[in-house]
Length: 406
Image 1 (tube, rainbow, N blue to C red):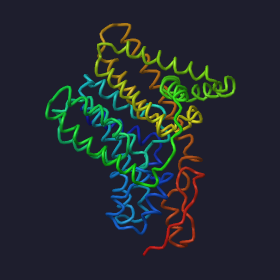
Image 2 (cartoon, helix red, strand yellow):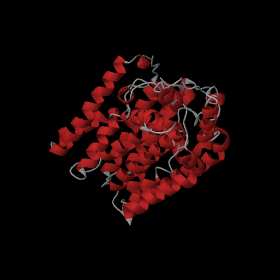
Image 3 (cartoon, rainbow, N blue to C red):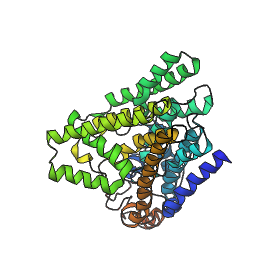
Image 4 (cartoon, helix red, strand yellow):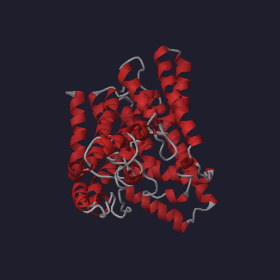
């Protein structure tokens, strides 16, 4: 019952959260321009190997190539959405198989973290944000037994590191693990990740879309981490919004305020590490999450204060927050000391409640902001009149015209 029951719960939760998304599918945001317009008259293998956004993604490119060359245009939205469903279930599979989750209840709770970790609106069931799910299961594999499930784990790592930059950020940890343990299976995984990481770094250095200036300011990272990895995760979106407005309007993000948020982050991390003491894998999972959060805040978000609010670049908080939640799940079902076990379970309940708020918010926002007119209806109208623009989700994203087929 265990694995299949957990995956069934995950799928049912995904469907019930907002059935129209799975029934009609979506073309989400840049999927329209990158995966359709730019690929419309491009050969299959050119689409498959093309870098996008300054990095390479074999997963995204494969489904983009299939969308242009393999299925009717009316089916493209379903293809993109169900590719995300597939990745969600694969991520759930790797979480369930993780050895650091020691009971069926812990494994099931870990799988459900994919549904109940905030923020889980922006990265939800779309192709273009697939890298954040790959980052989750790559981190889980990092802390799993490399000698078990060799083929699925190594294959998963290969696809993950070739499907966005997030897994590349974990390469130093895979190398360190292989040097410490000096076992063949760990070394194989390190080689797989490092080869893919070198490809990603080479892509980033050679593509024009990667030419961006990173305005790095260590001070401004503090409030991002504080509000996204602590307030948003444990106290929900509304409280995170209030905290952001207070920091902005009352304290004006002064230097003292920025330092205070850093102090709060350090205290919070120290408290969690103490709570997780004697749970080595949970501690490592927490530190891995904070490593990704720190680098994403520094590089992807430029450490910008406009990202402190819950809606600012929320997809970048998703992967670290899932990993933090998994660390707490692991501890909540393994700690024997009563007060620490109780504390871990209270934190887990708070995080699940915060995630439930986001879970319920999505269908409330879907009709106006996250769905739009069903894709099939748009395409049927476009087939009658090719001058008709197509509109991706969310509502308000620019409509587009497909070029003539050559």
